[in-house]
Amino acid sequence: MFFLSIPQAWHLVGTWSEQLPSESNLIGMGQTELMMTLHSIFVPLLLVISYYLFNRLNKNESKKIKG
Image (cartoon, rainbow, N blue to C red; front, side):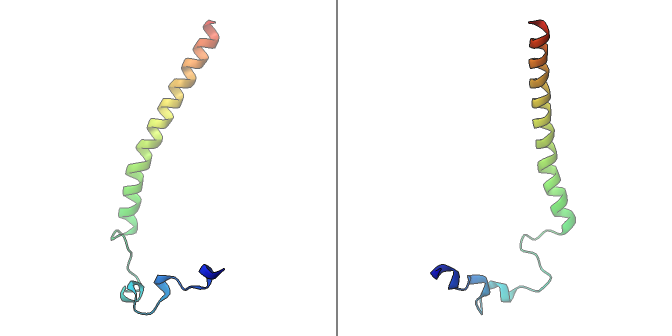
C-alpha cells in the first residue's frame, strides 16, 4: 500500500510531462506512420507463421493418408 500512495514521476510538477505540448506524441510518428510500421512488422510475421502451420498440417495429413 505504501507504493500506491507515492505519486508517479509523470504526475509530479516540473517533470517531462509538463514540458510536452498537449497534442504531441512521444514516439515521433503520426498515426499513419505508426500504422504502416506496425503493419510492415506484423503482416509478414503473420504470413510466415501461417505458411509454416499450413505446411506442417499438410505433412501430418499426408502421413495419416499414407499410413
